[in-house]
Image (cartoon, rainbow, N blue to C red; front, side):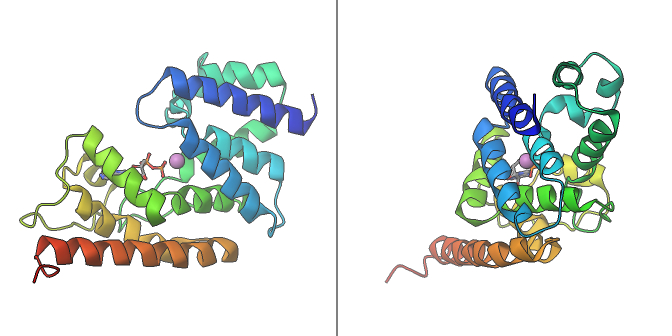
Length: 217
Ligand code: ADP
Ligand code: NI
């Protein structure tokens, strides 16, 4: 199999896994990140195969647990099946393990150019109109309130505190989404993020106006 065939077959494989395990991450998020990553990569000097594979596999739960590489996880078996090198596996794994947002005051781990591209693509999909939709879909799935004026946002100092935060979804905008624009790695992503960030601001302004009945005469 050549690289393109491996990538396309991996896309089919991920699509199947994601539809089997409907635990929050859906295939269309992966599909958007894959396409965004390809777009960003056009302007960068990067290994496109690594970019595409990491984009496709970044939310497959197997990878979130390091042990799974040593055990017989589905993805490990897949790598054996498509016969990609140990070096490539390690590059992809490094990206997947290090791209996540871990809280406002938590330092980011250094990434390769391929990792920077996938991280940018994943973060672009968290902002703009799609980001708003995803945040409320996530909040709803966890039974969270849309907004609660009695609970202030928190700038988390560690990942555990960020992950266990039980706040309402509007807080997530202040705790993560509004901070992403200034954390983009590539110029291409920065430009896209500026526009999507503006939409977040407009959304929050309108939400506040309606909450305070400022739009009612
Ligand atoms: P990613 O796919 O970017 O790694 P996550 O798996 O952390 O993101 O989350 C999936 C989606 O849910 C993202 O759009 C993210 O912003 C959103 N999300 C994560 N945590 C929260 C939260 N506490 N409240 C609302 N939305 C959230
Ligand atoms: Ni993602």
